[in-house]
Image 1 (cartoon, rainbow, N blue to C red):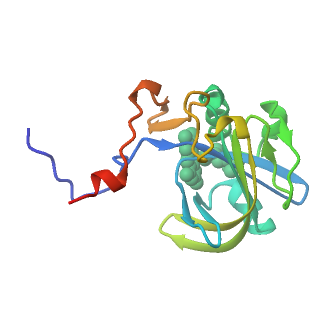
Image 2 (cartoon, protein in one colour; image 1 turned 90 degrees about the vertical axis):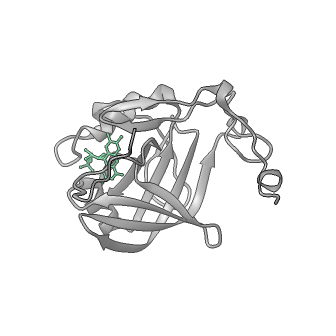
Length: 192
Ligand SMILES: Cc1cc2nc3c(=O)[nH]c(=O)nc-3n(C[C@H](O)[C@H](O)[C@H](O)COP(=O)(O)O)c2cc1C
């Protein structure tokens, strides 16, 4: 069947699934958490990580005030937590209390780190740039919390132990099927 070509773009979701994370922040004695699917690493040296956040989010205000944010990577068992913090507003509710979210102590910033996370980045804001209806928040990673047993000796997520949360859009979540993993060595496949 021929592909459709849309030129009237509107909202677009064709790039999903994406890993869903929980972005955390605090300022002025308030702590908060929100779901985020628009996030990415952008540099190893210095270690930079970016999240695209709407200024409508309470989390944005806290990050703008404190110049810090956390990025928490959770196992699929915590997908409901992602939906909970992604469906509520920190302006109206203390999400940590409401959803009984357990924390670990942060190391280099004051951002909340989620106990349920298999990995989390503590970031110091180095750039805050507006693009359309969102702002791209770039943070330098100052500390990484990670569960050694959930990663292989090479540093990749051990999929025999952890299932990541993938967000498909339209409130749908899935995780990877372990038996679908294939190792495709770029050195072998890139040969010509
Ligand atoms: C799976 C999922 C992914 C989301 N991704 C983003 C995102 O990348 N950026 C964003 O600004 N909002 C995103 N949201 C929406 C916020 O999480 C949501 O508006 C939340 O209620 C904001 O909370 P806050 O006002 O307490 O900061 C996402 C929501 C869900 C459920």
